[in-house]
Length: 163
Image (cartoon, rainbow, N blue to C red; front, side, top):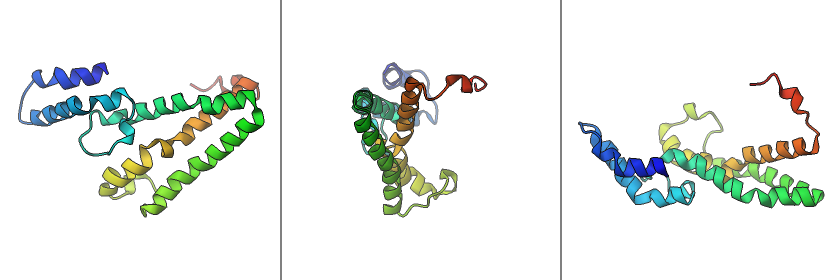
């Protein structure tokens, strides 16, 4: 929030020049949409309308996953079978949701660099890459690995050679 506040209020007064109008425009968007970042819901809003600090979609995803993770971790700790069932359902959903979205928008299942730039800036990014329902698979893997470490089923000494 300090970064967004500084950008929205101070940066427009720090310099000028022929391209400075772009910075001033971005700062005015931050003054208008700062609250989305504060509530960590900016990744759920419409993409590409000049929102403030577009890179914060990742922070919003992480915070949303962090807030919802007790709904997975507590049952896993308290009732193993229920927890395993939740992980199985979420694992299937983690694979299914990006697949369905990709098929619905007729996007190629390929690397971002090879896709039409108009898809990258609109549908691909807005619906397939930055949304939490398309990104929670990696977080779920982290929860599972953390649980396996908790149970002692994974030996952390195996990873000593890794950075």
